[in-house]
Length: 320
View 1: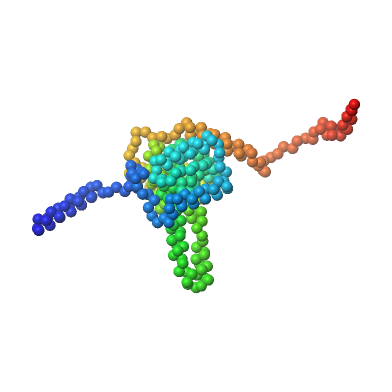
View 2: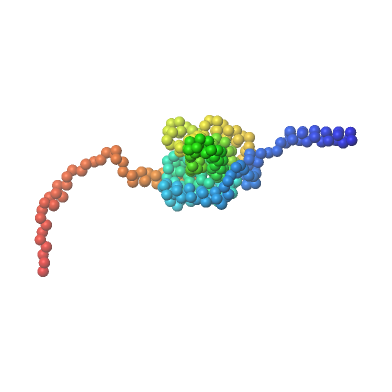
């Protein structure tokens, strides 16, 4: 019996030493586990099918109100870039990507894999890695199902207000109604925890696809600087949790701690430069089509010959 107790104590000591030397890895922080981990864990009342249906409905609203860039070269390039990132992500739904004409530096990720990239994000990027970094962050929101998880949390909060109905009669009912219905804003305005998680996951997707992970840092720094100079250039949804210095530092630390250095990365491509130049031409053409009411106008002098022609009777027509 004494021998058994000593053996168990020794076994516990050895196990404790092994645990201290090699603690279990957090899969969410291991890019080698991409695709083999559940990054979407949490309260979620939506099945995958229901989430796709909800995202499709919201995407149709975007398509009806936004200007979709239908240039085949631009659309194909951005879609291919998004698909490459999605293949190296934890996403469990197919990705549907479109480009919308919007000068704000952002992309819109809807539940169920519906993804819209603003022209402002493309034009703000100096390299393909920067553009991919911004897109990877939004694809991470889709992979982690942040939209429907956020909606589920909102529904739980609304359910918690049900007892108000029984407190104060109509006053309690009014208090519950003030909580407001579930809206698209609920699905799109993520809290700081979800934003940090999207930074963590998106960085790994960027790295796994072969891009320089510092492209995300560069894009975030660019957005932070622009937000200070011109707040209106940053989308209002993204501005709720802008890439502050703290978030940028966390991304930099994750690069150092989690990502193995590679001999080479993709920073940019000639195709990115070509597509960006093509988009700039397209944007300038659209601006030229829109008349500026403040633009100075030249007033033409009267056409004397034209006035003379109008005042001269037309010759009679000869008939046989």
